[in-house]
Image 1 (cartoon, rainbow, N blue to C red):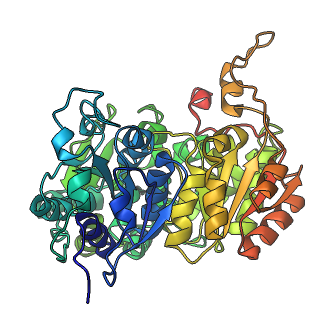
Image 2 (image 1 turned 180 degrees about the horizontal axis):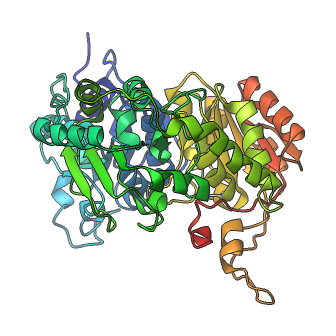
Length: 543
């Protein structure tokens, strides 16, 4: 006989049925009901992390790697507040996740601030500027409806994180065992606007395609490859769409538009057709990137900042639906900018390999590609090696590279790798600098306890390398950039990990990564090297 479930049980089962097969959380006195599942009730696995911020990062890593709903549970007050930074990254990167926080018991809700443990004046208010939706059910019946609405909100286009809080007494109280499902509208496109766009495209000369994360979310990778070949159009990808075209696809640019040769090609096109992208400041150099004079912008959300670009034709619609229709509405082309792409890409790489400043970085990217492409999911931190891999590394398929570039949160990679490891059957490579790694040392314990196949590649330059570059001036000190660091190999060994150290970015690093990724166990590879930042970093935009 199945015991009557609690409200917490029902909420967990609902997010699990919606795709969050693993939920990440930290127990506290107000949310222990999540850890007491009614016998016989199906539920997702609940994984304990070591910090509330890590819980949301892990849910984000899960969502990005799987394409499904992510979920995290935290406790009241400081527990919820600790999750805020990671929630902001999910918001700016449009990751679909549900954060469920407990609140003080109902009878204490109106108590004078500070009388109740963990009480906040407006706990939900901390999340309101970032959340796609805020839900505050105050009865068991309201929880059932609000959880369904929260899931629907998170997964509906454009996707994003939602916040839901439930008083501790209601969370632990009984609830009816019901199935809660999302109600997602079918994909659509504005046919009139798309028809106008099709006429512009057919009348134009060379085309370039700009593919954003919306292409991945819509499951349109194969359709995009067909369309690019039909138009003979190079395809630029954003941080959220890396790998949307295969490594061998002749239309894949696989380099950022910040490189001058790529920007020149982009500006030479008559028309830019964009699918599911924000044209964010990092990709457009805050609108200083030279784009074609005509831009067709196809997106599920047209209420975004345009960063000053003119000549934009907006088309409201799902990327897959729009691509399918454009295959029917536009003409096939015999020639386009794709023909010059191989030579163009080789010129960029030849320059990077020959420049003494970027030679090691180019070798680093090639080394990680040989070891990880087609093998691992790569989760990057906000760090110089992560900037190189996030823009220049060529994955074999979508959702195998992650970058916290939405909000630019340092310390993402290690906790997000926990979620990615549960979401995929591949090993995970978390790429960190020595500064960002220190944000989440506790998750070494989580990874060890769960025996996850995570390898941390820690590129150690003894401080914040990006700050050193940005502040560099001969004869002047660089405040805040140099850090005291532990012996990272010994630290990893203390957690029961395997660990090794290398001092070169070529064969020694490749051998270490191949061994670590093949082991199936937690591993750390420390690489003592300082890399020069790529042109995608803002201090180099003006060069």
